[in-house]
Length: 112
Length: 114
Image (cartoon, rainbow over all chains, first blue to last red; front, top):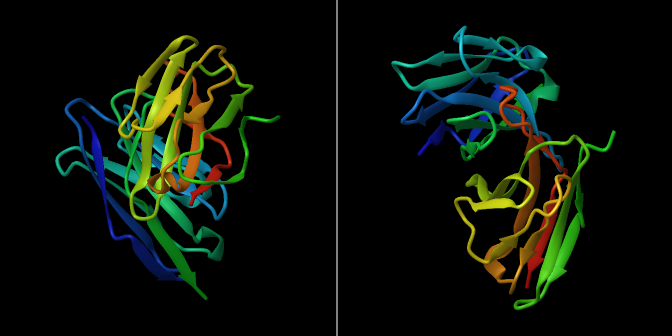
């Protein structure tokens, strides 16, 4: 079985500052890893994913994440926060490419 | 370009009532699923289907029923609503085996059980 732990339910950053969202996973098989974003009153949309190959993954809106097998982590970063990044972010894990288990989510607020 | 369509968007029920949340997708996805979203708990998988006529239980299936008679539709039935089922429900679909890893979500159905 797979599971995800997101450290920190709320993160507040200043506009232009680094965004760092932490995600650790457990999986009995090589995992597929994902980050999704949810804007208010909307469904989730995919930010980026790791399946195989390069461990540094780039996604939409300037986000990237690095798969570190030794640390069982898949942290999400963005060098410079924008007001439009305010949203809830979910890390997810799967042992295939469709049935996902989600973390509890991290809400990001961006201060002007 | 409809994607995943959920109805209704909002519903209020009394304890013990039954209802069906509808989900339809027009992308010919094999995989369809229902999640519930509760504060501080993320999304939890209720039921899923890998094709017409095939369904299976997820993490929190009790009190819910599903069927998949067509590729396009995957309704979620609440048999006897309870206040613990107050939540936001999301339907999501995906291809299988295409290694895309992208679930497509509907906009959600907010259910309140009194």
